[in-house]
Length: 159
Image (tube, rainbow, N blue to C red):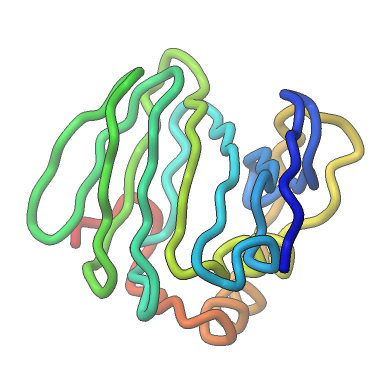
């Protein structure tokens, strides 16, 4: 059984992941695998590849910034205070607005997405967005397969 805890704003495992800063606040081992919670900071214009989670719902609470989400044939914009539900099995992507980074809390249920982030990313040496760099697409595709995520298209592709 896990113990209760409090993490401060600058605490938690920090990971540079696909040009983003991710801080894991609650990992699956703390919830018997039921959910995970991570803070994401995405740079302006960021868009993940079109993908779908084969075993997890993804819920985002936007703290600051904006993004245009595409999921299940629908397109919508979310900003501070908005909650976005991306249900299991539905292809989705999003594009962060051009003017500022987007900061959000992301819950996945069941847990496991935080392990994908750690597998693909690298420990952040500072709590800031990483410098831009190349992405190994083949390694990314292999990691998706290992973590029950199906890669469906390039960043920003329409589901």
